[in-house]
Image (cartoon, rainbow, N blue to C red; front, side, top):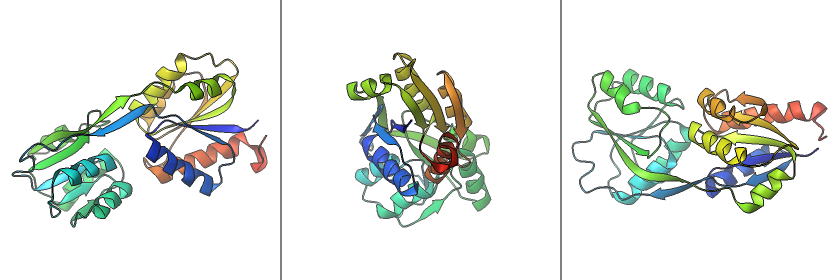
Length: 245
């Protein structure tokens, strides 16, 4: 039976990951059904006053910052390579790249001796409270919501495909996206479906566990390469000897 990869990220990100998965060797279907809509918010007047270091934990935050100011010499700490690349492409000249998640970000900021005040440019929903962590370490820090992450209903075409049955691999790139996936699929009759998860973190895997999962693999690193590796391993298990069933 052909595998079907369900991607619920915003369209541009889902399409990018789909292309990477195909390049890596994904042989099944790919069903793109965004459950989150991203909307950039205006940067408040003088939002960067007194800020010595900006923190960006997504490409959306970089886009909102770049749209809201002409300043490109604000030092930035990016959570990982994809966000750092987005910041450099947007013209920011001082970009530090952390190890891929919030814990590594805090550790790397401390190791580098970076000084605040810090401003965490973020979405309305976050997986980790970076500001509290920095304050606990004695830093002056504040957060600013610069994009919204509004939930979307599952598209009719996606509902029809899921209810038709099959083997589905659900890709969860954050705890919130996993929660939205679980909420959307619990409303469907999936008696003929077998669900397998690929989660970016233990918290995302926990949210997927609200569904009747046959298996769930957690990425070894909280980034796109980690998710691609987990997807490849899942495909290898579900397609014995590397051959589609």
